[in-house]
Structures are given as structure tokens and as C-alpha cells.
Length: 326
Image (cartoon, rainbow, N blue to C red; front, side, top):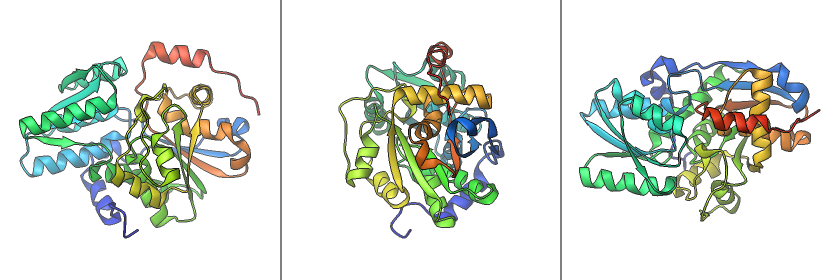
């Protein structure tokens, strides 16, 4: 672990500055899912908090550090969840927040950012264009640019999930982690490999947004010209080299799943776990659906990482989900 940017001691320290409302999230075996999936399944539920995603863990660390050094403003690019989380964490610490997002982002996420008193700027492009605009604002205004996954606080905040898994889970042998920019995967993966090295860390990404998975497989940054997935929270095109380096140290595998499997996973989480989740949160279930033989007989933990979803789109998706039978 010497080569990674992450540090287990700092991760334990991060847990002490994160608002407890984001910590010790529910972790439970979900037996109703198991007949259809053919394995033991435990859910780590990261949606039962004020921003309905795991992102608050990282933004709590960032906002705490900024408040300590007297910073007054911060800007980030976001597909929606990071922006909400940063606005929530900053509001209680007197920080001014600007969030740059694509105007095509999920409307419910954008509305929530506004409701949390952040300044929202929309760009006529995708998340990569939003990242460029956020960097330009930071340079022009001389304020902190928060870059998800590149800024180690976002990874180490997410890594506190790994501490809770290792400390409280019954014996499990596989953890399935949604893969986008990489904060969640590198953070949780780091802790699991440091403290429970026999557990297999499998990252899951949509087939329509494969840049980080292709990069992991080829051990070099691979970019794509576009994305085509309903899982907006993981739809990046340009992996960050330093994050890929961290991922290469902790991920045992990275797999791509089809849109139909993501939708089926969302429907299963609704029907069998009573959970309304956004597409990114169903990636773990989708991976099991596509390769039941691989996971047969295992105890798998899947991290349900977000539930900020457009209601109309959600009804369209789950209403069209195919029925999967064991």
C-alpha cells in the first residue's frame, strides 16, 4: 500500500470529522434478493442521509478542512450528488459554494442543489465540460476547486464505508462497488485490501460509460468521446491518472454491465428490498445478474450508493424492467 495516495490513519481521522448523520449506515443481509441472484447478499445502504448518497462523507472532510483554514468559498463540478453534498456540508460551516453541472443533469438533483443555497451554473455539455468550467471559475476567483476523486479527501471520506464494512460485517468474500470517477472504489478498496485482503474487490461500470474500466484493464488512461447510459453518476469520459494508479492497487476486477441489467437491478431492489435507487446504485446487482455462476455460493456486499432519481424517469425504467427468474 506504500504507493497509493490513500492513508488508513487519515481515513480513521476522517471519520472523526464527518457528521455522524453520514456514518454507521445500515448494513444488512437482504434474503429476499437471494433466490433470484443465487448468492448471499448484504446491502450497505448509503442513501439514508440528508443528501441521499455516500458523497456527504467526503464533502464533510473537505468542508471541515476549509473551515479550519478560513477559506470562504469553493467550487466543484458535479453530476448532481457531489454538488448536493458539498452544499449541505458547506452551509453549516459558512462556506459559499458554486456547483457547475450539465444542463442535462437529473432535474431533481439540480433542484436540490439550489434548495441547499448553492450557486448553480449550468453548461451546454457533459460532465467533462462542467469540470473545465469549474476549474476556470476557481482560477478566475482564486477559490478552492474541489475535484471529486482527484482530491484525496473525497476518496478518504468514502473510505470510511470500508472501515464500517470490515468492522461490522459478518464474513463476506466479495464487495461490489460502483465505478465512476473512482473515489468510492479506491477508498473502499483501499481499506478492504488493507484490513481484509482476502475479500475480492470488484468494480462495476455501465457498458455505455466504460472509460475507467478500459483504463484499469489496459493499465493506462483510456478516454472515450461520449457516454450513453442512464447511470449519470458514473458517466465520466476522462479518467484521472492518479486515481487510476490507486485503483490498480486495490481492484481485483472491473466489469461492464448492460443497461437492461441496471434497470432490472433497480426493479429488484424496489421489489425485494423496498429501495428506490438511482441507476448507479444498482450496478452491483446488475453484475450478479449478468454472471450468476461467478457469484454462486458467495457472500457478496453491494454498496447502494445513491437514491437521487427523477421520479418520471424512474417509473419509465422500472416499468420496463424484464423479469429475471432464478
